[in-house]
Image (cartoon, rainbow, N blue to C red; front, side, top):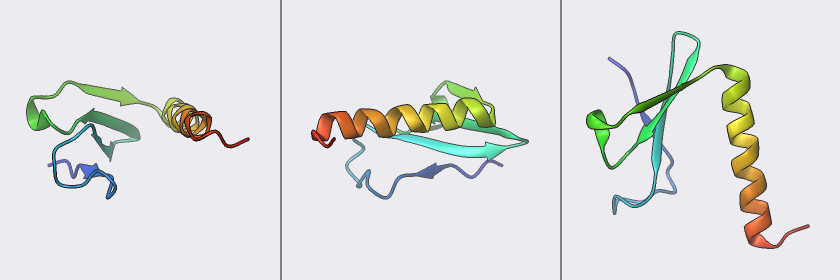
Length: 66
């Protein structure tokens, strides 16, 4: 059984959030609102790292920080 993790920043209101878990060398990502019915995106380590880097950059750009 997979152990899905959700950000502690997501709150309990079921808002816009994703869950992830690591499984057999892959990182799996899904929509937390859909739970087990959600499609799952499977990413290797380098792709998952690139996704996180892109999300961090987008957050910095939105915040207006240099």
